[in-house]
Length: 113
Length: 115
Image (cartoon, rainbow over all chains, first blue to last red; front, side, top):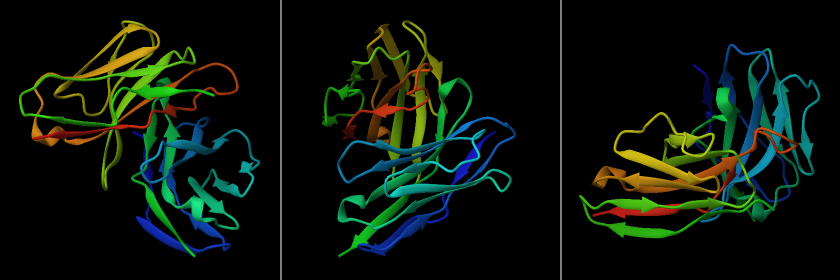
């Protein structure tokens, strides 16, 4: 069975600095999707970034980028120039069969002004 | 923009009550999902549906049932609410076609307290 592990329950970063959130997963599949979702306090969960496993190029969305290491089954999220609005719970997720998604337990990110 | 609407943000119910949580999406998505979110446990899948009148059990279906009579609406039912069902419930929808395939879009959540 696939699993998703986020080893950092909480992290803090100074405003304008860069932070990296870690995620590892376990699967025997060769083609799959990985995601990072963001859940701000008392607000809706939204997609931050998506990576397709067959694409070697790391996905990027503005200040958000991933480091996808397929062989190591690692999928970290880098946030550059951190802003106060980046404070949220971040979930790493893996798409399994039938469009189901398995979520990690989350990393709560604090932005220090 | 995709919109997933959950009928209530907060609900307070008594033990033994039958509880209905409603979810509606406006993007003609085939797939709909119900999760519960608890601190330290992340999101856990309760039930999901790939089509009208179709349902599949997720990882924690005990004590819950679902209904999908129309494509846009997916209801979660707690047949007899218990205190251990106090939680945040999230609904999501997705499509398996197009550029948005596999991306789940979430509602704002319903925080249910069972007393």
